[in-house]
Image (spheres, rainbow, N blue to C red):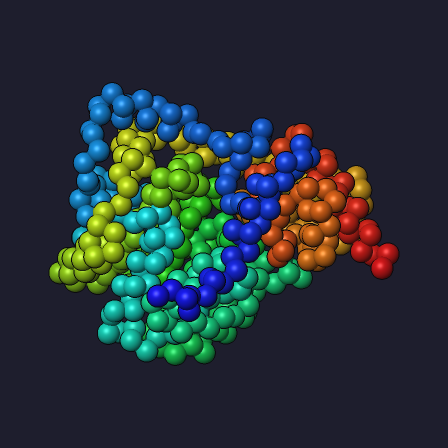
Length: 405
């Protein structure tokens, strides 16, 4: 019956992780997987989450199902974190929020919901490149046509704003644009507040639709600043969808905790959207995992734990910035490595696009046991005091070897 089934398409990140996991060398350095690592290179558990786990264990709510759409208190806390305490759209009940299987699940559910809406029956989805590898397949899975445009300019290490605005201006009405709210994956290149305002004006004029993906809120700047683009678009009256993940900013990767928010024009429409999302969730996976959302809810609902979490986020952000500066210093001032390494200083979050050729990256793996994707995206959280010097030295060596050819 299954003789005609073919292998699935290659997944570069899956293959890279397997290569790294199979490498038993004590020199191994994994800079590929998108996880915040501690100074010892291991999983980083937030103290606020440790305390929340203790509280949850003491209250022991059991293992019953949550509502199909998720715990209302958790969803409200998540919405306030994303849209702000004073959001008029929240207060007037214009935002439908449901729990999802982390950020990926939110993106999938958003795509599935939009594909079923009459307004988007003929819509094309625009994805800026380079992009997170899951966007295109999950969009095509539900039947959307995908168009690509250049988002990142490797010469300036920044967003190619002109190309983005030109693409918006020339897109058909009701086109959908995937926008990452902060800490762009894979480049780390984000829009400034002024650029967000220019983009909002351009999208309003072009009558196109924003789909925001926010997987790293609080790791680029404060949670409010990282949500600036989202809050601006809501204030300007956009209808939109927002995909929210708690994997990175709460360290709950395996718990698959996320939320999909749909911003609508009015309360009645919002209620209908919410019920449609409830149906899609029920038909597809019944309900989301409860454990992670309960921990997030405890932290966000307790003023002291919330403050502790915000301080921990600040410490994580500062360490990412410090790692960037140290790697830049080693490459530019210690080794005087050929090339431009400014992206380390001009981008934010976990990721940075290093100007390395595929052949150089392969040499980093084979000769130095340093793992990062072929596109040069490095997870700066994987750097620490014991390996940063080795990474800089190895990069310098493979780059200089390439210049001799």
